[in-house]
Image (cartoon, rainbow, N blue to C red; front, top):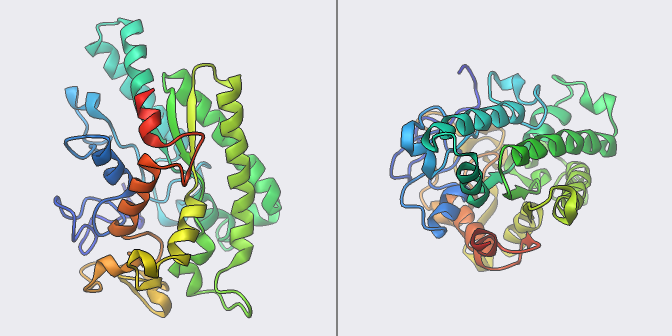
Length: 317
């Protein structure tokens, strides 16, 4: 796939057992850390490589720069948008039919037990709405109206997942992207560290997403249990309490170029910072492994960032 949104080169994966695999961080992602807490013995394989019985242990459909909207991220090249990812999941379900020898009841009961994680939305802002030189969405829609059309599309996509057999679904709020090194490098505010115009725009999406979860759980999708994971609050807390959590640097990428190491993201073979555990951000956009692990632990066993239950409780349903 031809794209600039890739992380299959060093120093990405510098702390990951399998090296540079396309994960946008130095080590484990949030989902990797969560899967370990859930007892997964191996890392979940990407859709492009998951074969045969392997798919029974989980599949990763993620794609760099992908969004809820099909055009999102196309400034960076090709990707599998959320619509395509749902189609790919549908193909996996067809493949699983063979293993279950057409026994739809057993297949559905298997799919109903699985956990589904969907962390979409941030690219629809970073690589679409707030990129007026490539996209017209910011002149076509107010921030509130854009959140509304995004949520409409997302509700349809998540309902499709449900109709394919998904019942236990984790969806994430968009994090505080007005405060990532990429934005800090570009923003010159008088009385604010972060770009609050961006943070306000995504708050419309986040509050709408939480309502959507309430509606899905309230009978709109019978038998479904959706969990809203508040990445906005968690990124705010990591930033505010960074020092007490062991992060000395909360406004610069460990690997990157220019102001806040955020003007250009981590380059091939670039020398990253030495003490990666002390940085909240790995590159211009993404958290370090340490931040991912802290968040996975918090959302797994406590209810600091999960609604209406934590992920351990969801898994046990």
